[in-house]
Amino acid sequence: MTNLLVIRAHPLDSKVSRSMQVTDAFVKSYIENHPKDSVEDINLYDLAVPDIDRDLLQAWSELSNGTIFTELSEVKQQKVTLFEGYTNGFLNADKIIIANPLWNLNVPTRLKAWVDTITVTGKTFKYNEKGEVIGLAGDKKVLHIQANGGLYGGKDPANQYLKTISTYIGVTDFQELFVEGLDYDPAKTAAIMAEGIAKATALGKDF
Image (cartoon, rainbow, N blue to C red; front, side, top):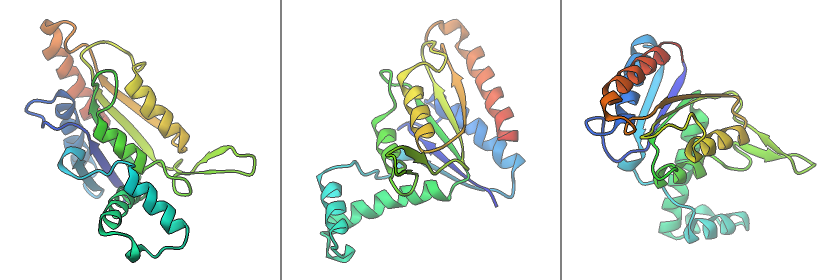
């Protein structure tokens, strides 16, 4: 059975968010065309996503020095467990959808925190004897869905960041779906959205 993981990074739903409307169209199409696949659809703004903070850094240091997990403080245990939960969720997925708006030329902060949970040495990448990075996630497919007010053609920092991270951890099948120019010419917004939803529906059949 194939496992699809949908990562949404927008605090608002599809009634307001255009990136989520397009993502809804993809998910609906995917489920209809892959009825035997497992789909986990989560919104990072509905969940706790741990930042790499003092607690996590100290916990990792303590664990590496031989401290037993149950001897960590309760807060550290909770943050380590949350962090590893997201890491394992990514590792268990065969296909991953990352859906977000472009905010101030970047990804939402909650998405950055999630990306940190999937960029883990020994799990999604490693170093060889020459110190070179070897990605370990080459068997996964990633689709990035992003809505933009302007026109960037994938050259915006948010998409470049996600593409770079995906390449770093070994992903070779990185696909993109941009719904762009939504605020550039309001008279064209409805048509742009209709085209984006049609593309998402088509992608859902074959992804």
